[in-house]
Length: 240
Image 1 (tube, rainbow, N blue to C red):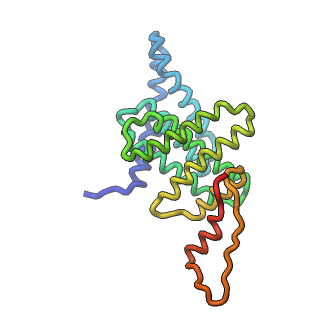
Image 2 (cartoon, helix red, strand yellow):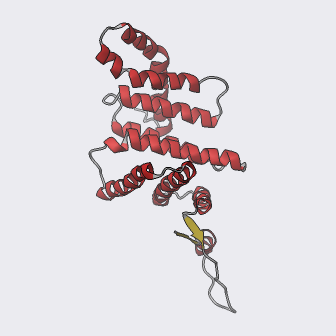
Image 3 (tube, one colour):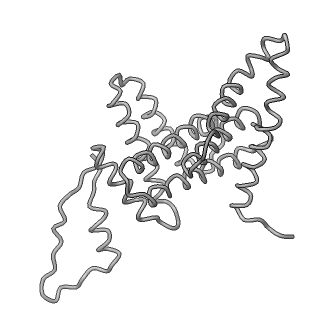
């Protein structure tokens, strides 16, 4: 029996969702709109809004960023329609893969505007992931992960108290990027270039600051290894 890789399973899930939402859901919506049952219509209100959003997202030529946004909408609809048939663990893996895909966009552009758009995309996915999935999670494998999420969620909810639009956006970006940076540090294979991009952005947002690197060598003093040199160069940052 051939075991499929995670990428194939990931693609199959999204292809199945797309086929249903493109072919079956419009028929279902028309049927519901013809019904006199107001409760049923109200239940489908959010589905219709999300479907309209999906239809708008597939117009024109789609780049990598647009493809990711299209998949975000597909997952959002799945959390409404397929809460039981698409297991939480599968939906969670799909969200995590989308976050990884969005992070990769940071590495393929040197254009500041496009890089900021990539950061916004990462944050949008994380926000949907936490709103539509993590906030409904009951069972946690690791208690510390639940505590980390509770701390993050409290900071996120506190954004409601910020009235200034610029301050709101800046604080929101900092909250999400700090949370995701901790996730990046925990990965088995550390993506140093992505970590560095996050740190640079957090310094720009005022959530981290650089400290001077005063490390010097004298005479035959033992040199630090390359890993420590990299840390001196890239990790001379502290939280504010």
